[in-house]
Length: 109
Image: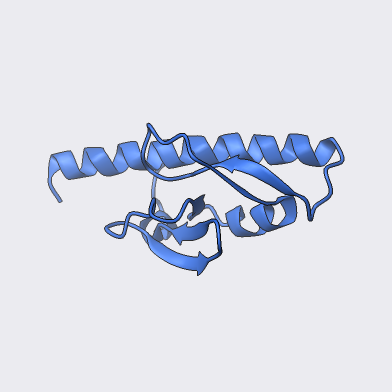
């Protein structure tokens, strides 16, 4: 991969992690606030596009399940990046994608 390719991938991972961190804080606040685990709540799309402002809805318990692995992200359909991600689950309003390269031992974030 070229230097530009590595830089693009690093920026994409940083964007996805920022969205995921935001969503995890959101989930914790909703959970603390007593939102039922089966009630759909809005989350930010965790795609690698830093200009994405799309939202998706899923229940808190479902978000916590699918986002638990560090290499998994929830995205709006069509926002997956097949060059670096694998779709592991398909749902009506969102996809769960995995970035297999994040699983490598010793990988820095």
